[in-house]
Image (cartoon, rainbow, N blue to C red):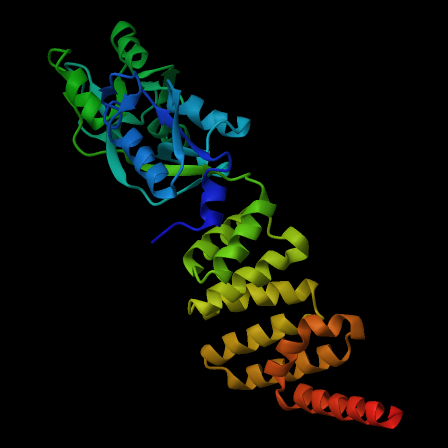
Length: 349
């Protein structure tokens, strides 16, 4: 499927896809090419996305995932390949994960700790790379052990060894390498979490651009793109354009067969825009699909009543929806208007 102009504008507003790459993820960034640019799964995915969008690519490099996540506020990247994590999700919208990496602990030789659950005890100290996805998870979930964080994977390993801490937290592939450097040390079985590697986009992108992109995608017959763009606007600014985004998103959802979600949004919209004929007709259609014809009939009657109560200069925008609420009435008025108009012309002859 060819990307729409709206999708290209939303993902690469400068005409070049600026892709943020976390260089510390040695699994997804495996080296550098002859030109010095990163190579591996992460940069390859960014290049492929740019190719499909038909735009150029710029790889924006970051030494740590924390630095990458912080830079979202600076507007220096369009997509970021990084672990999806609730703290980051406050400012970054993530795709579904394309890769899952388990996280566990190394414990030193002679440690009595036998499971990941036993690490969280009073007096235990855990070394961890600061601002990593698994480190953010530990910040929320370690309640008794002390989390000692330093910048970078190598520094967390050195801290663990030099200060003789009780455990070293990390991604399993890196721990497998590190444990070989520590005679008698072992990796605890199981995992305490799994990092969901995904592609993120800034949540605070211009809502006007996203909104117009959503409307354009809907008009081009691309409901999935429309839903994604309008959902992003609604998620960040549910009252955008006096809640108009709720109405537009509801119509997209209704077309896609998601009547219950559409009905919920329409009900919220009507709380603020009670005179909307279109919203009542769409809600009636949703209720019909949900098996509630009685309520649908009542909503259509209310829609017609709202239309009649509108000032004349506003009726043109709602006329089509009024026809859907009560088809015979607008046609009758149109026919009557035509007769009156013809009579007026004939009277002047």
